Image 1 (cartoon, rainbow, N blue to C red):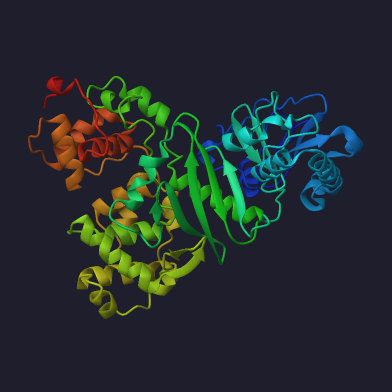
Image 2: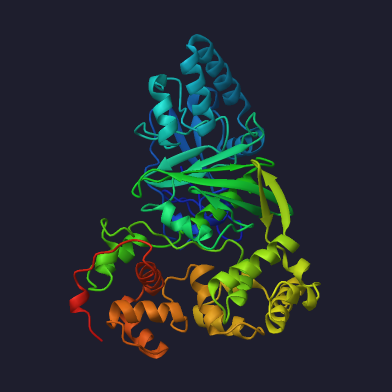
Length: 495
């Protein structure tokens, strides 16, 4: 039976397959864009809740759980919720631990090692799981390949169940692994070509806040007042990517939720690539760029996890080339950011607004920021530190309201505001036509190289609604020559 909660906390009518949004995300659910559509009660509609005979699935007060009939059949739903949330399934854990120890003792050394890796990666499912192919399953990732799906009990990480392609996480979390690191494994939203998606972090050199080497990105996330360093790696083809986040620090539901959301931003999971590809297939300019053979297939523009960091970067890039802008930003991060050691790499947490709010302009001038830019950065930091500017409220506003609010801040114009919409908030229908690079890309691919002003670029971009943000990024990527894209439609393109 499934019970939904209203926003005020009262119980709504019993309905089929409901899970409240608020509880879903509070307990470590995936980012909002991965949830199914709201049905009016603030709850996504889930499918595939009918499990195998030995599992009974219930959702109580917004928490979806798998209730084993052995030992728990007589529990009422509210008691079961409390048991899961606070008792952490001690009986099940003890049974599972005893069974795993017995299996490990009976297996040969190779199988025992594979089983240990499998537990840490979250691929051990139940007693009758075939352990002969665990090594391959570890390499394949944490997804459950047994049909129908069952509740997973992994020795590290949250319980994860795959329901009709939609994943949810319960409140259960496990301690860090023995080597002092914890692992969070998940399947990002496909298609995803992680190499070209993350390559921007290494394009201008080594970024101290986001060092990127050989397909691996390191960053520092903020989970409340705590800094959590982590490493993000992605494997697999664009149609079936597998991601792993290794991190240091407390392995808690709040930390895992923060890291999962940050990874979703870095991998551009918010973008509706299938919808964009379907629409672009009918456009003579975009169609060659979105084919699987184009070299750009699976490119997802990354989103800035920290909106303040995004705006400081935008100010740094005003009226200068990107190489110089990157150099000044690196100096800022090294001077005022907090260095954190993880896996032998020093990663700097981007300085918080409260830190930069008290910096003298002369110190930024010494880093080769102009007088105006130094004032802009410090002024922005002060507005955020004092609460005059609430980027959380800004992020919930419509596009034009976001632009109006940001352009009211000294040093932020429409160019900065539109890039903030696209690259921080992931708004799908933005064309930053005031950007010189965007204009040059549109001129080259749509106007046979003939110069056009911002108004003409915006008129041309109307054909790409409601996916102008993705269209802009794909044109920029193609024009920059990041991948070779064969376009037989070039001769057909006109003004």
